[in-house]
Image 1: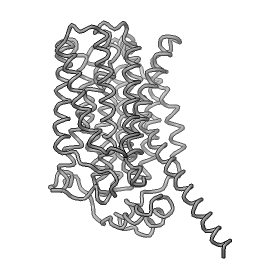
Image 2 (image 1 turned 90 degrees about the horizontal axis):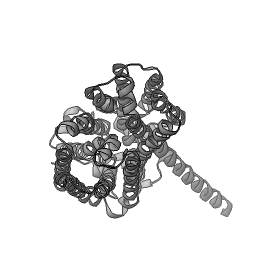
Image 3 (image 1 turned 180 degrees about the horizontal axis):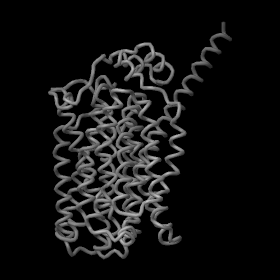
Image 4 (image 1 turned 180 degrees about the vertical axis):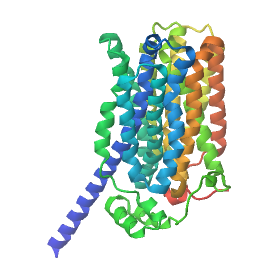
Length: 445
């Protein structure tokens, strides 16, 4: 009898270890998608000057190339979310990366501005789809005690990718004088590795339950979910078809407005400043600006790591609201004090990067928690698309604004965007820490 009990305990322990390993792997392969997103958006900032000279681009094309992947994400987010809610998370999880790899390889061969725009647009569509599949899938598999931390960790990967791209670009342009096509094409390497790692991932048990495939859902839940409470919670899933109109129904319009506006206001100023950080800092008298740009993005990485460490201790709202007010204040200082010493300007940019990253870590947490399974992909995709309007406009308009309106006015506009995000979050941001998905995504009037 004792031997039987020991064997049972041993099996349960091994099963628990296997489930933890699966959660770790799933987090890694989803975070990998964020890494390559950050990488392709960051690396273009290091070679945009070389591309402009080589292809003889105007300011219009410079901004359009910088924003091309963001425009693609705008398209791919809702499309991928709609397909993920209809067809399942699993098939989209590999297809989007295959499309990304195809586009990444094409970067080696472009020889005109319009070709580069089309290629990076395609890559952006794939990334947008990955947002709408990855975050919902991770939220549906994560144990509730770790859900926020794991979802926020994906933002760590994004900032690592963004910063790593700056380092790679800096070394390859200054030390090795590598052609810009090769620098852009380096995104192929992590994408291929990630594609292979994703093969064999299971379907979401919540999606299966929502589609009425109870037996499959129960089998996968018992095999992969760590927390017995989460296994029990999937029985609360309703067999209900999601529609786009549900996002704006009385039950979910507050969630849709909050996530979309919050995400928009986080990324619009950051993408504009970070993508062109080298030239922005140079305009403020900080040398060629590239070292400062790496510092800005490095501190942003620290900021999102801090949020990952704190999110399951102090909750979501405390990491969402105060940081946006801080961003508004430091950008206001830069905008109003146009003759500020370069060192002070750099400090303000560093504070902005740190605070902005702390709240941006929540942009991937909230959509996975506050939308129900039947529109979790679509809701994430819509919020992703809405945020990329801000990111795309910021990236596209910043060169024009700096040239025609001046640095001061440009920073004041960015500060105003931060104020809007902070105010909306103050009113609408929910607290979801420690709650089951069936609770956090329950209808609200």
